[in-house]
Image (tube, rainbow, N blue to C red; front, side, top):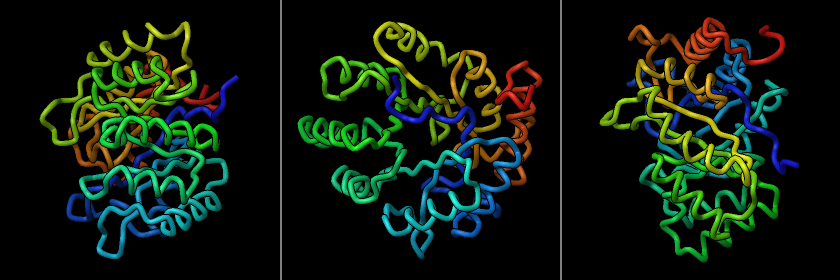
Length: 269
């Protein structure tokens, strides 16, 4: 039996830690904008949201009060939505601050990068992973490369990361744009995931960047993975045009999935 609620098939990541209104005027930053985006993306076919919060200067924040406020507002506006928070460092926070935020907030679902937590000593990271599982806090592990996935699987084998069911956020390409997002690069991840099918239940989701985002998501779905779409990762449609807003990115992904014979939920069929 799985310990955690499965990841949604399609999750929107509408803002991220770094982009601002200068990157796109429709990037949601204030509470009302985030809630509005959640409602629109739900209508467009997303099943969950990955939330970041900003302070009064629109800087990335791990403030527990801000998170409580936005989670409650989104859950009220879109009761059926899967709501996830982030613990991303974004160059501002170390592992101590990240762990403290999760301990204080006790979210149902939080994304946490392996490479960021592993800046802490192994025993500290291991104790934290164990505490989170004991508390029923689901960590969605961000892995930026197949090498990091290998490191994660080694951590599970060694007992550093407890449990046999895990949620993974796999990244195709790079935020900086130095590595392009290409559908064929899923191969290296998939080999590692398939190699552990016998002993681990791995619920995996993919995100990608730039105008290749849609193609990467369709290929992910074809292989049985889940998808994350939105302005945190890409502002662009498949034809290279700038998307109007997050809901347009969700709509394009849903339409592309349908065209490829991939359905999101029974109602889509």
